[in-house]
Image 1 (tube, rainbow, N blue to C red):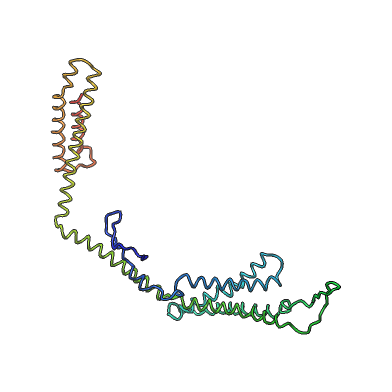
Image 2 (cartoon, one colour):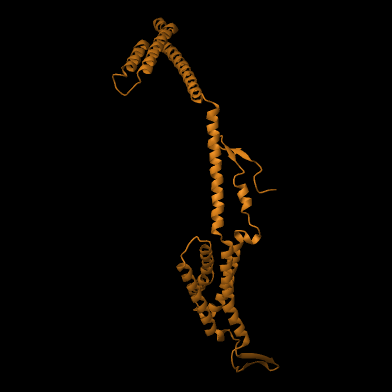
Length: 321
């Protein structure tokens, strides 16, 4: 099953068509050719190199350092910084120089100086501690009379100690050069910028397409604004009818409740439906007049221009009373 979505379009929450194939071709275009070019593989290799260096440095500092675990961790971390982190930065900076992204060589030179100092310190410590790696000069033999310990005087340094010293000096150099080489090969700033530019171009084309679709909708319906205005006017009239029906319903409800509370024929005649209809007719007439004046002269915040509204409300209240 393909990891890409099979759908070519979908609808968002606003009902707009969204292109699901966006950036699909770019993903295929900039896909890694080999597994070693994958984004996660260089990090795994660099972590492996750092782990190897950590073990090598632990074997050194555990013999010559103090018994404090904190001091041991600080010493190992310092060497890991010089042998693993700085070479990665050297490969990145050198790649930037090769591709013309930057012209600052001073940073690269300082990073090389840091690595050189770390290499020199490691070599010096290995040479000075070569005797600590030599096998013990005390030999133990077992006979029928029991265990006998004999001291053997050996001249010179054992070949095993020399081999381990060379190993301790060479392995960190190999891993550092490997980390630097991997970072130089895998890091491609121009390629990253090229991919981002291609994605931005596709995003811009998609936005242009969406704007063109909106403009096409407007061009396909020249009377779009008039139709929207007509629809709004129709909805406004429907809302007026609905509110009028609500007012009539509330009036009927109040009239019936008042009849129940008063309970005399005179009140029933006053609160008859014909009188209420007359009141509503007068109210409709006043509202129609108000609407005519509002269209002719827009209502403002001035009290003189809003006097008709207050007059209509007072008349309606008096009529209902």
